[in-house]
Amino acid sequence: NTRAAYPIEYIPNAKIPCVGPHPKNVILLACDAFGVLPPVSKLSLAQTMYHFISGYTALVAGTEDGIKEPTATFSACFGAAFIMLHPTKYAAMLAEKMLKHGATGWLVNTGWSGGSYGSGNRIKLRYTRKIIDAIHSGSLLNATYHKTDVFGLDIPTEIEGVPSEILHPENTWADKKAYKETLLKLAGLFKKNFETFTNYKIGKDNKLTEEILAAGPNF
Image (tube, rainbow, N blue to C red):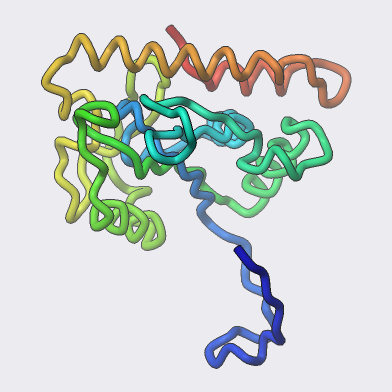
């Protein structure tokens, strides 16, 4: 595992100066080994802050010694080891820039569908690519959405090149009871993790933290 540095001019197609416009989309990635998060969700500003602070992914067998079944892991702002300020401060900064420049937040799950790790299947890479293409083209903004239970996520009913049945995770589970139980289990892990972030205040009141909390799972 090495590092190297070299002049940017060594890359033939590099953009010089290396400055681009403000992004119109902020994509948060999760690998949900529990198989209950949608392949893609359009997030409100508060939900973007919530999932940014949560920094959720899952460990599966083979990634770390002793892991036998899917294990949720959370890393605040997707980089807890490297941040200096409280995660809510970074989330507020992100939301401010998104609001100023009209960016939309998305949660993209590259993990499992039809069941948890071991029983379900990994979401196909070609489907994730179609999702990302639809985000960047702007077509996904014009899709029809419906809201999920528990996490309250807005998920599209149709994306070109992606089977519609996988867009809502429950459709892909044969055992609906197991799906619901797993969904509630993951929601509980989110809630427990977020308990450590409820004591931070920005300004004179706790309004922002309350708004972010309200954007989390509700059950």
